[in-house]
Length: 404
Ligand code: C6P
Image (cartoon, rainbow, N blue to C red; front, side, top):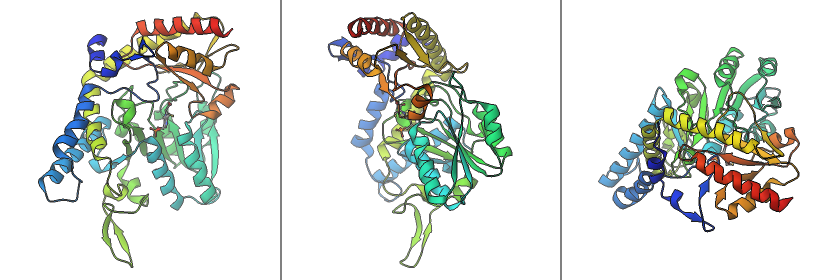
């Protein structure tokens, strides 16, 4: 069992007051809070070993390079990638998806098909639409039902020899649905298509095993797993990363440059042009160590309790409707209260120290599907408590009285 009070002491921000009230941070889907070890590791890097990496013979450059590559190895172990060079540092999920979509421009022909799901974040829609514009490929959408579950029989029907890549999130940011990605990966491969998994909302809750999943690409952001902003991971199978052209040109990604011709560096450097977020890359390793120390079994147990308790307590509020009622669900509750705009509730409960996200959550097609302007989203992390849920429920009741 997790000692939540002990865990909370690791996160200095959680003892802050916001608007004069104890902070209740339920916007973990947007970004997680950072434990002291992560905050300290950032200072330590700049105080002790700051230098550019992969370039200098001097001691600091070597120390920084070693720390960066050790961190890559930690991430490799964390997701069980076969090789360290299959683990690319990016600036985040959005960067990772754009990198892959850009690479597919050299593969797709007019009439080829890309499958996305009906519950994607804009980051996993727009880059593919841009790719379709460039190549003449066609975007097809895997539909969902009213519980917010993808309809697998429709997915099976959409797959064909025209499908070149399937791209789907592991967990939906707006609904909390855990998608059946193992099934989807196997089916995509049977149809001869590649598959990318957007793991942005999954990695805070579970440890993906990319070899067991057998996905071609898996992307996520560091800031959602207790790490800093501006750093993320793109896992790609070696064969795919060798096949795709580089995304950006510049320093670090070359073997040889002349004015006539440039040859590219080996993986992972081919995709890591320019000076990267060195501190971010190193500290992402610290964040992953921290999450593993807490333990994903403990994280899941605590979050399941929060999901069940939160769902029960919120449903006590008259007129409250939850969007996203899939059988397989993580600790995200999206809801609305009849006759009240989500933004109004969000603004009032913020005055009471409670941070939730309101709006379309960068997933407008989901809101269109449910014919709503947006939702209020409470997304819980392992450092949250049922007492905090009580505070939120009371605050919402108060806001409801004020607004009706
Ligand atoms: N979702 C949320 O509040 P970046 O911004 O690149 O770190 O992550 C983009 C992204 C991609 N896919 C999914 C499923 C996501 O949830 C996100 C980020 C945040 O839901 C901020 S919009």
